[in-house]
Image (cartoon, rainbow, N blue to C red; front, side, top):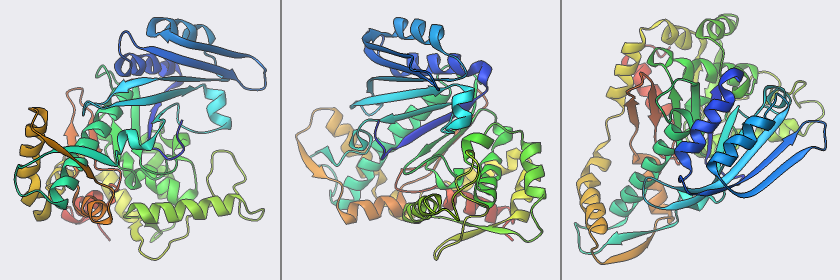
Length: 384
């Protein structure tokens, strides 16, 4: 698997882990597609390899071998919602394995970042005004639909609530949910979990996979225990997320600063850096006390696209339709600084209520969810 992501994570109870893994495989793998399976166990030389086997055999092998100390990895080709194909892999970690190496009970990623974030795309000629903004908007739309679809296929392929929460992370590990590009919750009533988990990760240093399954009451108690007026720094953009990631890596390499427990990414609160926003203990507590329906309404109101996006959206949709209908095309490089900046500044946010009663918040991996959350909290007069 690629170290560069994007990474997709899902948290579920131990009892539902294998079933959730199998359901995700069925949703992701073509019925006649072949998979490579690799199963390893902690502290034993036992290893199972199977190459080019069908999904039914994958399920049989996994059920027979899975235990608390095992790690299962399955690689396969997946068709993205945009129509492109990607080499993809998902992993399932047993409870004991997860305690020693916290990575999330379920994790997935493309082998090559460019499979999900392509550097070049085909665009129809002669539609609309063309230009960098329209090319960037088309690239963003295609990427966002793939990210949304992959996260749902991992977390809720059958609209079944086996998975409690999940996320897509553009860079690094599953850290603060408000610094990711997408989150999933099986129950709308737990939408404030994004803020609570972010506080615990940023203020106490715990890896999010180790706290993601806690009840909101338990998370609230952790936040209540912090001193009044306590605050943490939030990375509002991806470059700041990378900066903090490098700081955590440096701390982990230092004898005096490295974490003293496997479930932590650092000792205590994360140091703020220039450009960080602030999230206070009191804001998180108020959000947890807020009726979830009001939080969700505020998030939806804050997800309206800005003027720059609206000015190109219609032309971008017309161009996508023309491309699908077979119009002549040209190949656009969408990695220039102008393309990337447009997406970083203007890619929209999606707040998607799911038929199962769950909800997903999502944007392009070049952005984080914090600006969406900040606007919603401001609307509700919760920012202190």
